Amino acid sequence: EVNFSHNRMTKMKDLSDCVLLTKLDLDNSFCEISGLEQCCRLTHLSLAHNKISRISGLGSLPLTHLCLRGNQLERIEGLEHLKSLQVLDLSQNRITSLSGLQNLHLLGSINLEKNLQISEIQECKHVHDLLLLRDLNLLGNPVQEQPDYKLAVIFLLQHLTVLDQEKVSAEEKVSSVNKYDPPMDVVAARDHMTHLVYQLMQPQILYETLPSADSPYPMLVMTGPQGCGKRELAHRLCQEFNKYFAYICHTTRGPYFGEENGLDYHFVSQEVFQNMIHMGKFIQTIQYGGHSYGLTRDAIEDVAREGLACCVHMELEGVFSLKKSYFEPRYILLIPTQVEKYIGHLKSRGLYTPAQIDIAVSRIQLYANTSSQRPGFFDNVIPDWEEAYQTLSQAVKEYLLLEELEEGENNRASPDNTSTELASIRRREQLVREALVGKSPGVYSQLFKQTPNDPHPGADQLAAAVSPSSDRRPGSNVKPILPPIPTGR
Image: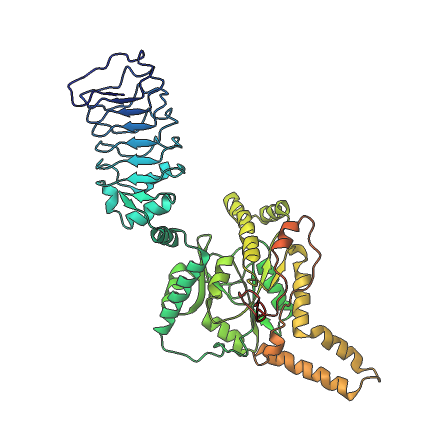
């Protein structure tokens, strides 16, 4: 170990003969780094308070600690070969960017205090992939004046434990994620709070679909990745069962080819959509693909006044948001199991860019994970969209008792029918009518009770994610209650 600090040296001779040199302090008046190329065991090097404006001459030294404090550096360069570097001090220079550090994967500490040139938070993206980085010091830089500076840096570098010489707390890490990439639960809670506040600011109206412990207003929600067929299924269901279901939804996106305003969606501008939010019109809204989607109270009420149930489709974010409201729909998950076939289907529609297709495919696992990790989150899972309507239609018929009614009508002409059987049929018809207007929770509780399906070829992983049928109330997200533990155990 050699310490030449606080002298007036301006040039260092070749130190290649010092083969055992491991630590060297050269805090003098050097303008360049030289003579160290052959120091094959040098791990600690300090060149603080010199006049160095460019990093060079370090070659591929096995440095683990490097101090360049108080020099005249403007860029970080010449360090790309120092693969063993763990601690780097670049404070009191003129550095404007963190570019040049991205390949130093063993870096655990970086000091950039008082450079006075680092002004953008996004500069942290250059060290985002340094997974061992735990300590970052940006004190005395203009970047600290940026709004939410600390949370933004913590979010970009979530493995940090010390920022600006202060310990990063777990609460700060959670707050940063909730602010810049919040979980769906957090987004849904904020969404629900926003709409509730705006709705309370308006003159209060007595709705027909207010919450009821005994008879929640019947709704059917279909969800799944983009282009999985949920919109087509919703419209087809409403057409076949037009005496029971109606469709409603608002969006700011433009209509696709063949879509009609008021039938496929209520197409509105972003300005109108925002005004509707401020007027407390919405129960649930989401942002997806750069567009806004939402359900309004008035649209649901219009359907309810007709004695019909609402049938809608939405992305997973919308399901999380709707679950925060007082509605308790039945949630049907449509999920592709053959990815290549799904990709071909999206391409054939000609509506999506390659980037949008990649996003849609990446979300398949998100839906599967939600189903497997949250028992009861979905009331039914249909894995094959090509045969989904048959399964969906059968489930609806079972709920509405239509199959039994059809059998009863066929048997009415039979002389073997008794007055008791006819009375039973009429009773069932009445129960169906009461269920649709929310007066018969006993029937409604059976809505879309999951029916056994043959797994799609290659869908073993998905089958494990599908939760079993449940007698819990519609939209329930509660795990089954275990029986009490016997006394003495």
